[in-house]
Length: 256
Image (cartoon, rainbow, N blue to C red):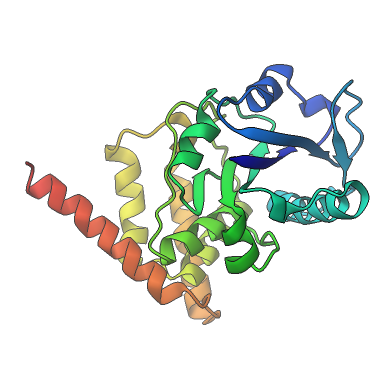
């Protein structure tokens, strides 16, 4: 498998040698790794694509814009064509990967795999389903996953990666709630989220404060009251999420 990896690192102060090594030392795949940053990183031997962005932009918008700009720069200035790869891998600088992360996820042949901070996207999915452009949205990685779920392809994950805990950011959580509405998430599932976060065994990066869920609900209700347009895949997404929840309940009620 050939993987084009974009290592997202804002500046030199956010670069961590251990984290970067966990990316370049992936086993079982052929990688081309480029660090994407808002200013030169100044790390010897590092292939660095610089994409200046405004600090005033919300983080997801900065990341989304940088991914698209980096792909364009790689194509025009370095002759690196995405279509010559099997997967695009977007990974954040604060992530530490197990060495088999890419090998295990690519072996599933899933169109989308991993988590937002270490997101693997098949090139056919990127070119056809996403139209050859990374979504510039407030919940960019969630949108990619939602498109995959709507197609009936639930993104597989890998339990071994290390991620920092999720911090609380009220505007971001409100924007997530708006996006949940536009994806087509049912109100029942939205209401179930706070309960699930308390009873399920979640990893540190999956745990969120209770008030984050409340703000999600506020964003969802705001979008519903203003009748925002839903994405074209919303009906399929809702059906697949509801089916997934029903299957989980059946496994609990009817154990083997």
